[in-house]
Image (cartoon, rainbow, N blue to C red; front, top):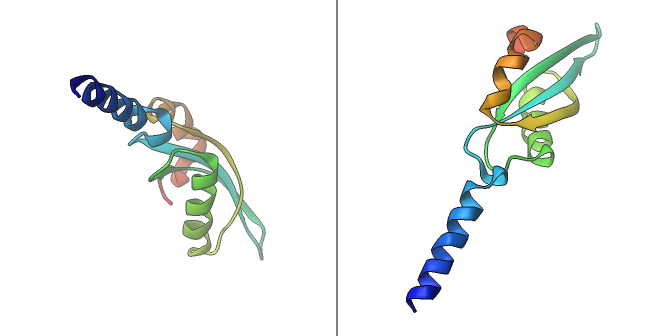
Length: 96
C-alpha cells in the first residue's frame, strides 16, 4: 500500500509539473484588422494547458472582442522567452 501511494504521488507530481500544465504559459501571435488593414504581432499569457490549440482558442476570443482576427499562433513558451519578444511586440506585449 505504501508503494502504491508513493507511485501515485510521483505520477501526479510529474503530470502537474510538465510543460503542458505550466503555470506561466505565453504565446506569440499575429493578428489583423480590416478597413483599413492593420497587422500586429503580440505576446499574450495563456491559461490552462500550454499548447498552440489552447492559445488559438483563447486568443481568437480575446482579439475578436476588440475587433481583431487571429492569423496564427507562432509559438507557445514559458517565462524564459518573454524578454526576447518584448521589443518586437511593443504595445501588444501582454495586451490581450
